[in-house]
Image (cartoon, helix red, strand yellow):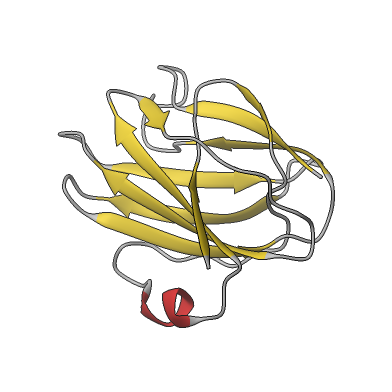
Length: 131
């Protein structure tokens, strides 16, 4: 399995996700154990997502891991090109890591954000393109 990371706060061109599957730091067990082709690692710091990502393709299963390196709870919500919510890593406490497995099935421009309070408007959002 290849491990990659995601950089937040702007437009990204990746080959990432599409169908729905989600979990939080409290409900991640069985989904973390499912077969995945790649792991995307993110850190939440100061109203930003930090990391980088390599190329991913439609048809792959990707595990997203969100490590909260901040003093506040954060989450990661993932939306498809039509605005449909595909899945999320629910509220993740400081110092904890949450996980979600997403199956990549379609191409297009996707977005991600933190749905807690005003975190999205403070910069916790971005976009990426699935290839």
